[in-house]
Image (cartoon, rainbow over all chains, first blue to last red; front, side):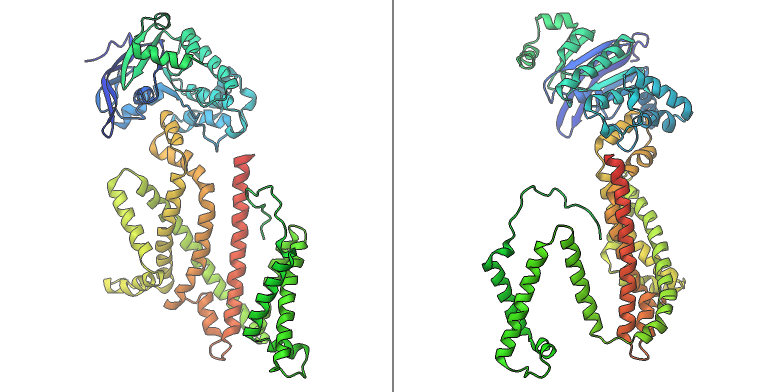
Length: 250
Length: 324
C-alpha cells in the first residue's frame, strides 16, 4: 500500500522492532504530515527513541513498512542513503565530531558526502551558525563549548544537508538546566520556519507551545495521540495520566 | 627523560618515613647484612690496601659503612627538591651501569676500529629493515583490523585466521618457515626480503589488535551521527573514526615500533648483516665479544630512546588539539 504522498512525509505501518526477544515496538502506525510538529513522550524504555531511530534506519525494523517521502525503507544502501539525506537527527549526547572545529563539523556532510564546493559550503554553514546564534564560535573545537552551544551546533550540522524532516532524540536531557531554554528556543525558531519535526522530549512546555500533536508511548505502543490542548486538558489514557503526574510533580 | 607531571596526584603531603630513625636504621641494617653476605672484601681492599680482607671485624665494619651510606643516600635524595630527585636517581643508576661496563676492561682501540662498521653497515641494515617492515605491518594491521570489525564474514574469517596464526608462532620460527619453508614450494627468497616478510606479518598481527582496540574506543555516537548525516561506511572510517583513533593508538604503536626494532635482531640468524649479526661476528675472531656486543647494545638503546622521544612529541601534539 503506497501512502498518500501529498499528505504524509513519513508513514509507519504496523512497524515492529525486536531486540533479541524483547519487543521494543509493537504494530506502530503513524502518519506525519509535511510541516507537522510531533512530540513523543512516555516513560523510559517505552520505545520512543527506537521509533525515531527506525525512521532514519539507525535501527532496522523487523516488521511492517516505513515510508519517508515516498521511499520505502529496507536494507539496501541506496534507499537508506536517500532517506538519510532527507532526515536530520539531533542526539541526546550531541555527538559532534571532536577532532573537527565547529565550522568543519557543519561542512563535513556537504563536502565529504555530497561533494559540494568548499567555499560555498562554508558560507552556508556560517549562515546556519548565525541562525543558531553561535557564529562567533565557528573556529573553536566542540570541547571548548558549553553543552547548550554544542547542541545548537548539532542542530545546525543536521540542517546543513537541507533535510525535509528533523528528528530530535531527547535533545535537552543531557543539558544543565540553565542551558535547556537556549536549545528549546532554537528548536522553536526552526518550528516557525515550517520544518517537519519529530521530537522525543519531556519538555511539556515546548510540547504545549509548538506541537501539533502529542504522542504518548508505553511498552512499545502508541497509547495516546492528540492535540496538545486536548492532551493537557485531560481525558487521557490512565497510563499517560500517571506519566504526566510523575514528570509534572516537581 | 620526560617532564610529565604524575597523573591525578593527590594533594596530600605524605611524610618522609626515611627521617624516622627506625626506618633509617632498618634499611641500613638490611643493606649491611646483604653486603656482608655478598662479601665486603672489595671495599676493604680499596680503602685499606694493606689490611687483611678475611678479618671478620673489618668485614663487619665495612658492611656497616655500606649500609649507613646506602640509607644516607636515600635520605639525601628524599630531601632534594622535586624534579631534582628524579634526575639524581636516574644519574646514580646510569653511574652504576657505566661502572658495571667498565669492569669488563674493554679494549677501546678495538671499539674505535670496528665501531664505524657496526654503525654504518649494521645500523643502516637494521634501520631500513625495520622501517620497511613497520610500514608494511601498519598497512596489514589497518586492513586486518577493519576486516575484523566488518560485517563481511569472509573478511573476518581471513583476518581472524591471520592474527591467530602469526601471533601464535614465535617470530624466530616464522623466520625459519619463510626462509627455509618457501624454497620447498619453489620460491627462493633472499635473506633480507624473507626477514622483512616475517617481521611485517608478525608485527602486523600484533598491531591488528592495537588498531582494532583503537577503533573500538571511539563511541557509538560518532558512528551514528555520521550515518545519520549520510556518510558511507568507508567515509565514516576514513573521515571520522580513524582520525580520532590515531591519538589513542600512538602509545601502543610506539611500543610495537620498539619491539620490532629489537625483534629485527632475529634476522641475523638467517645471515642478514644487521647490527646484531655484526656485533656477534666482528669481535669473534679476536675474542673481543664484549666490546662489540656492548657497542651494539648502546646503539640499540640510543635508537630506542630517540623513538621514545618522537613518540612523546607525537602524544603531546595530539593531546594539545584535544584539550586546547
